[in-house]
Image 1 (tube, helix red, strand yellow):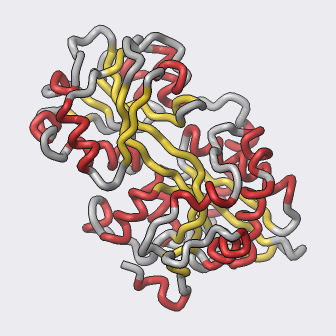
Image 2 (cartoon, rainbow, N blue to C red):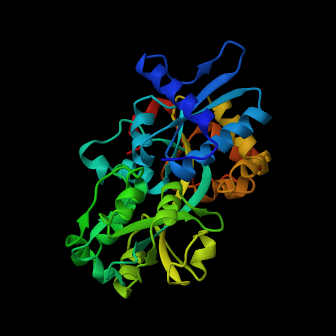
Length: 353
């Protein structure tokens, strides 16, 4: 995927990956000057940009934590790598975290040993459908028999989308789709060449679509796939995503073309910063402090970061799921802690299933 202006971050990513291959990267530790290094796994596109923005804010406003952004293959992949101890933290999503706890979906046959523990909300992603304008696809029902791209394997946006579509009463249409598997970096070219009929689009309302969607927006004429009553019912019946309607989609998601509709429906994900259970409490607390007290600095670097203050940071909190003790302490000090929430215990890290 092409990213403008991120040459330095790509160089850093290559260095960290090389270090990982050499067995250098472990869990968070001191860098030699009492600064704790925290390596944060981050998916591509807008998520990666939010990770870099948080890294910039921590670098500017903290002398206690060295925050390093490492590219990771999707939210689900980040959850696995955090469980394996490759990351001290990661940007994931509530649906993947819940599935990991319930050991369903991709986690059914390959469960994680430990869960990513809750931290704070990063931003929402709204997911919806478009098709190439030169196809005959107008409504969701027309996707039967079409080549459909629901994002890259391992992406939670894909997993959540397929979960929604496989609900009744859209399961029959989903069963007839030809689902395309490829990296998001290849998808815009495949759409331009006519090898993908329809694809999901997703982004943060008021900010814009994620990077690979922006790329196919620039290369291919597309139109909104009109939602059906059945699709609305499937979205509303699926507990892992929220149902939302928009009445100005082109402006809400910063499309550079007319997608043939103002009013659309979407299924939403809440994307969060989560932490490995062994990441030091004070390092997590410090990252929380920067996100709260210097959220404007994060937004100055990447407007996709949405929470303004501790209360909004805690808004994505899940019941019956562990919070990292450093995050819990910060919320308690900020007066926004919910006493029904669970504070994780490192000695029981493998037991929250």
